[in-house]
Image (cartoon, rainbow, N blue to C red):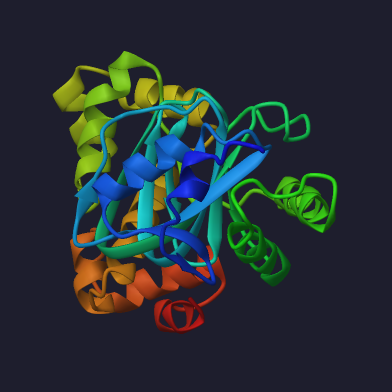
Length: 281
């Protein structure tokens, strides 16, 4: 008789979304156990109350994170990513990352063996998910830990991985420049999205010329400093809105003079106003 896998022998509480950890400590323990499962994928749901920040860590398996409630920010060497509800983030195996959340956050996580995803998934990729992807993930997380790889359950895993693989990348991330000369600027903006210093002020503080800062940002990130800062502000705004803050307070906190200016930026980038976005998520 086959010896039961520990997670089967000691069944945890399950929900329609799968195995669920109720706090960060339980999530870490369950994560470590699931990544030893002798299957292509394993997964869990997790709830993080209040504000939560993890230590920097990496997994031997790839990780797909789906936002269920609240907003999670993920910092990697590639850049900073946000995961609001119904959005996902693919993190390749071995990529060091750190998560940060505001207010209560719930996510679903899928751990994927390194060779199970198709080629072209060697970099982090944020995405807006489809109802089909979300339904497939819920179905897979509800399966037994040691699911039947050669039957219906194995075919569901195939479909889920294919659906994740075909999702186009979204814009909910910023590349963190690697040039040390930009370090002070980036650290300030990332830690305080409402930072209002101009390029000329940054040039005076760093000893770099305005032209040098502009050139370095374009070379390192593919975008201007102004566009990069706007993206950081948008990501911080999504996180705060997801945590329950009002549109007015968020607009002022991330450096806009008025809610209307913030709403105009939000609609230009995401195609809808903040309130409609919150109603959708």
